[in-house]
Length: 92
Image (cartoon, rainbow, N blue to C red; front, side, top):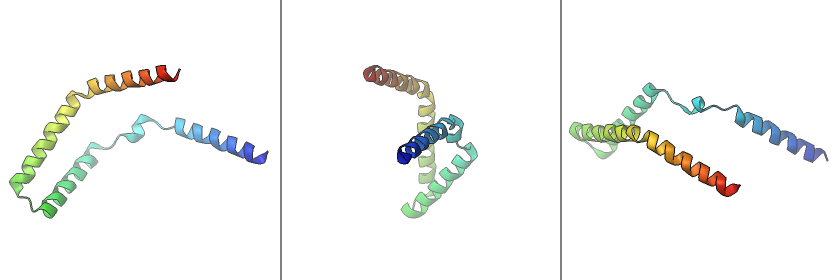
């Protein structure tokens, strides 16, 4: 009987702990992200023996890809919402 009570208590506590997390917890500092990006580029340059021009090309490609993601972000969110609603409908 004690095991059941303890198990139930842990489940309830875990549920409340997960409910306290907010989306803001997952957001990262843009300056920190840019610093990590620069470190990654330096590492790639060292490991792959890239020239400065090649690094600039990679950076340009990354910038282009980020711009495309931002442009398509609202469309992707709508698609995710539609999928989630479809999943909920199937579960019900």
